[in-house]
Image 1: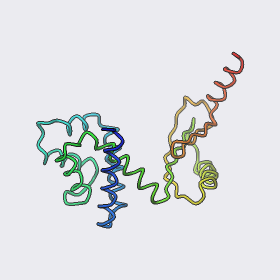
Image 2 (image 1 turned 90 degrees about the horizontal axis):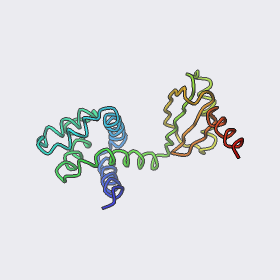
Image 3 (image 1 turned 90 degrees about the vertical axis):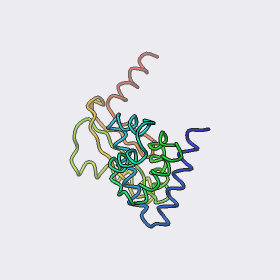
Length: 179
């Protein structure tokens, strides 16, 4: 079966469940925490995929990673995922849920990468330009510093990238000189 189909179906079910229970925003935050935990802790996936680890322990581990309460919507959903032997899709489900939540709530995921730390005024200027292009969407901003871009910045808006970095300009110049 398609790897995208299963996570999207489960994410849709989680979204409907959280809407019924009135805690969609809380579930969104818990899925964000879960994604960060999967990204930062390589052992998490190994632990929850371990067939010898009891379901209750897997659930406790996922609840701790996501910050979910044991009796909350996310915990009940994760228990269902574990019992249906779909635990290996848990991070993909979380990512699909977050994408769906952002689409349905008019939120754009924006990542600004700069060569050096920028002040709030410079970041706000970039965000204002992005907001003007998005037509009233709310922005979920992530900032990071990457000295490899030498200077300038890159802006990633929902997987569309504006690359205004010195590194990319130098690469374009190099390619132009070679041809």
